[in-house]
Length: 524
Ligand code: NAD
Image (cartoon, protein in one colour):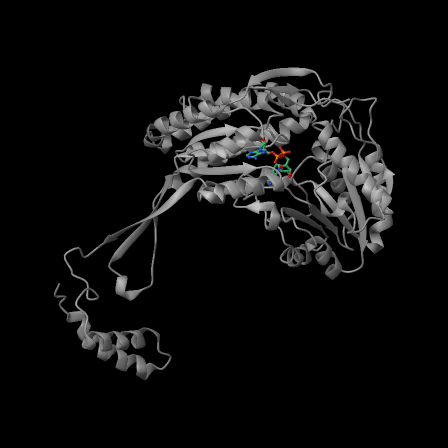
């Protein structure tokens, strides 16, 4: 029977999902460690914030240099502990983290500049307001195993550059990758206490939610996200929730079948389908359906499944046997309701306990779990549609709303349809790659989450915005101050007419009625 990473009393055990070999064991953080970590973070954060954005940018630059120098070792470790092909670890994890560092380095200074607040109320023209962005203090980050480096690194860099301390609770299945992140940040010069890692499973995660952190960035499944949100609500802890997806791919009648079928196969099987943005449902216009399915079958049949460290491999193992069982259950449910597995549909035990064959399902419909629940495995269900209207209806018939893709030779048609899709991101003629654009906000609608990571909006999640307003006429007592009276009330009625009445004459009369108020002397 397949084993999996597990929490053994107070330790977590990291396993290679391709071989089940033990890679390491780590001590779990208990209540005392959690308390001490929060205290250490709170003690260290003010100096980090006071050091200034220039110094923090310098630290990120050193992190970027170190990561670039160690790119191959880091990618190999990710491949080993999470199972994904080495080249995917390099491109979807290390490159994404390097690019996030680039974005933070370039954006942080202008992002943290005080921002003027122009305003139109003539009564308050003597006010000069500025927005200042200040760090929350201590930010908790809880992350999953499927992108064990890029996800926590991106969130951590954004939190650090804006002056926060970070407590990271990585997935219990990928602790060694988190250790590597810690080591890189330490070598880059992040002070002790400013970045700490707390190992453990969901129990440690919920302790972090309950601890005295100032904000939480959670990435994981919808069910855990809801539990986290409930806990956070009880003490009004602000949270960002990056949750699961069931991303649809819409192939319109004018799409390039050759290109779109390659995209579907890559988008569904990248990271063995264990990507929040992977293609989970594919809808193809009926005129292209047969040709499209045939191309996908041909391409999926050529995929080489095996240990991700082997450079000749396209698809690695699943993370653990629970994930295997979930995928098998979706395929079995679909087949029992009339679906056909035209490729795959089975586990590959000769390769190891965690390998599932890249699978294409046809004759699927929305009564099946594989079209409604997140499968998170190497399964591509393909369903025909007859009109754009129907395609939009099918895409939106889901509790999720992370991302979607539209395939068409007519970009304007794609954009028009994109406006009607309920999702945080819609890509026209590509899949998944939006995660690699560090300037682009990432996040979902509906059950796929709340808030954004990445880009300017991701930086906004790391700061409290404060309005600092200065009066430019400090020696002037304001006309609206005490005392009131009937005369003043009538003048103010006139003033509202002057500002907002539709008729010119009413405005003029209002202005004349109100003007003596300008010379009013407040008496208290
Ligand atoms: P998960 O929800 O099981 O676990 C995520 C993290 O939460 C882990 O670190 C886990 O230890 C911790 N956790 C578990 N129970 C907890 C609790 N009660 N309180 C606090 N923390 C707790 O998810 P997973 O299996 O690790 O990851 C896969 C899921 O993550 C998929 O649904 C995938 O779509 C989603 N995901 C979303 C994004 C995104 O950006 N939207 C990115 C990657 C993964």
